Amino acid sequence: QKEVEQNSGPLSVPEGAIASLNCTYSDRGSQSFFWYRQYSGKSPELIMFIYSNGDKEDGRFTAQLNKASQYVSLLIRDSQPSDSATYLCAVNRGNQFYFGTGTSLTVIP
Amino acid sequence: EAEVAQSPRYKITEKSQAVAFWCDPISGHATLYWYRQILGQGPELLVQFQDESVVDDSQLPKDRFSAERLKGVDSTLKIQPAELGDSAMYLCASSVGPADSPLHFGNGTRLTVT
Image (cartoon, helix red, strand yellow):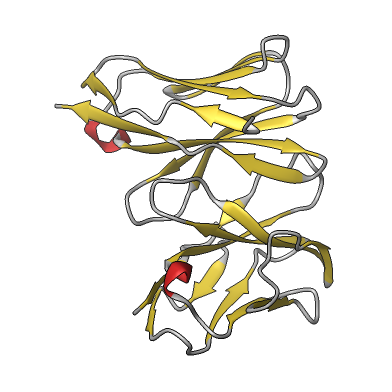
């Protein structure tokens, strides 16, 4: 079983819609959770991190964590074409980072 | 905003040749990581340093890969000899250190082995 699982997509949403990206993790000992955006040919860029159950909002982005269900999600409101990228979910356990394979998002103008 | 510096950005080399990558983490970041990312996959850890010490190199192919961080600041990753399967993006990242600190990535080095 993989440490972190994401639906590879592609996920397509129209401009202005809400994009919902999901991630599950296998180890209940995971302590902190991160979302990275990666444009094609570029390196990952940190978008958000969350440590506690519940929601964390930053501008158009909301991270949601449910430790009981071992589930992390990222919502992007008012999606823009510039949000088209691959989104990587990462978890930290014991100072080790584990990455999912990423979900490809396309925002259609 | 402080950045992780990596060089070169791109490297093309022939198989069996040696290649080296350099990384300078954000000032004050004690933890440094080297990742390899193959197209369509997530980054996979090669080696992790805490200051000058190796914390985890369990996934580093030690017959051909080596990494060092002699003074606990910048780091070098070397491949000798390079193989076709080494073609990938090599990413350096750093963090302040505590387990809940996020990783900050450099721009990466795109390696092509011909």
